[in-house]
Image (cartoon, rainbow, N blue to C red):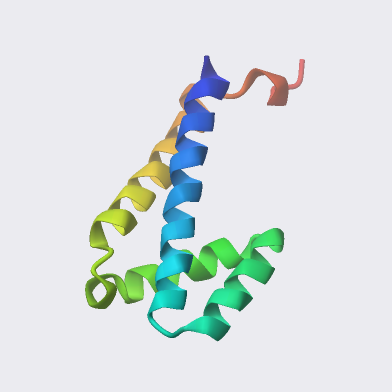
Length: 91
């Protein structure tokens, strides 16, 4: 059950990330979009998109996306303590 909840939150999280990166390209921030995509494999790209998304949320009219992304991150962290994924728990 826990992995289902975490998976759903992960999919929503990924969709929000993609929407922010697409908005980067649409707004002429091509270099930043490419850097974000390249560095997402080491985890930095997600942080870049999240921070820059909040900085530009009002200008790009993506405030609902950023609020959703923030709530999903907080829920996922909170649920990690309440509903830990069983295979990550050492016995």
